Length: 290
Image 1 (spheres, helix red, strand yellow):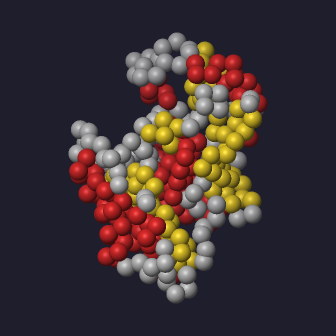
Image 2 (cartoon, one colour; image 1 turned 45 degrees about the horizontal axis):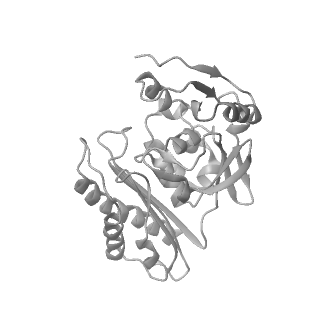
Image 3 (cartoon, one colour; image 1 turned 180 degrees about the vertical axis):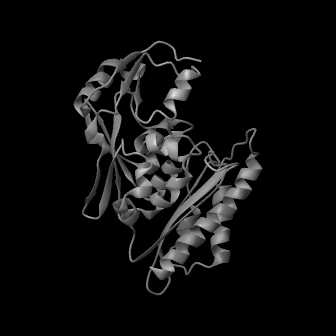
C-alpha cells in the first residue's frame, strides 16, 4: 500500500522544526529514522497530514561527553551505540543492547530518539534509558523541559511528549560508583525480532561486595517498560544468585502481562523472571571485577 497524501517539510534547524510543530501540532508527524513511521504510514495505520523530516537538522546528531555524562542528540543512529567508544565507556549497557535492535540495516537508519518516542513496549532502548536513569530534554516554541526517562513512557505507544514538542537530546549519567556493573538479556523468536520478553539491569557494589545501587527494568511483557520495585531490597545486601532469582520472580509478578499470538501472558511473565535474574547476575559479576 501507499501512504495517504501528506504535506512534506525538511527543516534544517531545530527552530524551523519547532515552528512547523507549533503551526501544525497534532496533524504533524516527525520523521527521524523512519523505521517505524514509514511502514505504519504505508499500511495507513497512521495518516499524518504533515510530515516533518528531521534528517537535515545536523544539530540533533551530536554525541558529547560533559562532566562524565553522555549527551546524545535524538538523531544519533542506533548503530553508533555499537561503534562509539565514548558511549561504550560511559554507558556500556547501551553498547551491549544495540546489536539486538533489529538488523544492521535498520540500525544504520534507525535513531535513538525515534525509538524512544515510538515507545514500542518490546523495544530495547526505552528500557535501557530507564535503567540508566536518563533524562530527556524536550523542546517546543513554548520553551524546553527535562523529563526523567521513567516518567516519559505512559503506556502502549504513548509518551509524555506534547504534540508541539520534539525530543532534542538524551542525557545519560555516568556509571554508579564505586563498582558498577550492567546486564542485558532478552528472548526473541529470531535474531532481529522484537523481544517476547527482556530485562536490563544496572548495579553497583562497594569494596565489601554490598549492593549500593540497583535498577532493573523488564520490557516486552506489559504495555511499556517496567521499573522494578523489588530491587529496593537488594540495597545493603550481598547479592547471591538465589536472592537475585527471588527479585526476578517478584519483579515479574509486579507486571500486568499481556498475551498475543506470539506468546501468552503467563509465558512472558515466567521468561521475564529468568531474564531478570540473568541480567542482575551479569551486572553483579561485572561489579565484582570492576
